[in-house]
Image 1 (cartoon, rainbow, N blue to C red):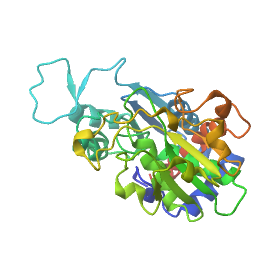
Image 2: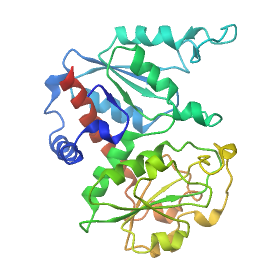
Image 3: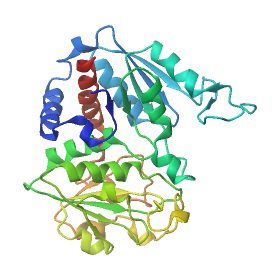
Amino acid sequence: MKSFINVEDIGPLGKAMAEAFEIKNERFKYQHLGKNKTLMMIFFNNSLRTRLSTQKAAMNLGMNVIVLDVNAGAWKLETERGVVMDGDKSEHLLEAIPVMGCYCDLIGVRSFAGLTDREYDYAETVLNQFIKYSGRPVFAMETATVHPLQAFADLITIEEHKTVERPKVVLTWAPHCRALPQAVPNSFAQWMNAAPDVDLVITHPKGYELNPKFIGNARVEYDQKKAFEGADFIYAKNWSNPGVTNPADYGKITCEDRSWTVDTEHMSWTNNGKFMHCLPVRRNLIVTDDVIESPNSLVIPEAANREISCSVVIKRMLEAL
């Protein structure tokens, strides 16, 4: 595996899931693969779970780890071709990337959407420059449009906690005070569609439709209560307007309806549903205290499984070196 961005990159999903549970039972089994190998983790944006879980996974596999926070301790990087670099950016990615590749064997990149230019964001400009110029296998630690390590961990969590063979899983939009990217809901929808035993429903206000390539075969339901009925898992996440129905709205907050906040009443519509969120979460905006602190909340096991999903990805890349 030379790159990891989308669900198809992982290969047969059943095999990847089996590998995840094998690693979870014996986390240091493949330590020999990473001996004398180095992972470079590059962060253009803040991180807690991704930084910790990815570093832990690499260490479990015997790797050395270098962490570079581009916004603290490195030259400011220019990402666009053809610009006259007479501003505050001292180095271009086109030189920085191959230099980074000299010092490592694998690269993980985290870079968020700018939410001003839909075409630029969905072209994955920054990530693709790393794939093209680093000379190393590259995996996404969240990008402008996807967060595959999170979605893989989500699927592991659902598999561990499901009580029926084909659970109803609902991805619900929830309000937020800031404009957020669509990366998490995009990947969640993509991975749930790829799983053969998940009944996926997506609910959100009209105008917040995700890109059709991520929606796939999921059912879209604009009535949140109807969507929640009989659900086994509720996955709450805010995203800004994807600009699918109106490109001028891309990246904007066009709905602030607090009735979409997931509270006890919402969860009462479900089949004793489990609550999920990728974290960090704005309490009493996305979800109320009582729901996230309830026995049916899976946010901590979900976060813990980030170590497992990342371990599978890094293992696959090490095996391909």
